Image (cartoon, rainbow, N blue to C red; front, side, top):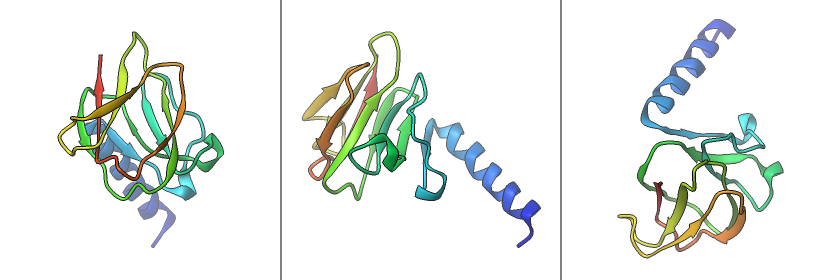
Length: 116
């Protein structure tokens, strides 16, 4: 596959992911700092592990395959919260407020809820 084809495929994937408000990072391309206006879950317990998934848009998002402890960072402004929920419909939740990163056991978590 040519470099041009790879770049086009990568760009198209990014555009489609951004259109949904959700962007998942792979370890090879993982960012280390959660951007302003986003809520992020990392691959491990530190920023150096890279961002696994990030959200910017209000809503409930089902998540799967998270095992063990992961760093959760909420860089959203104006007191938006990320709720880590045990049920897949955004209920039975614990919150992470802006400016307070937390390492959480993600094994029982089945969804996240982003809200103002």
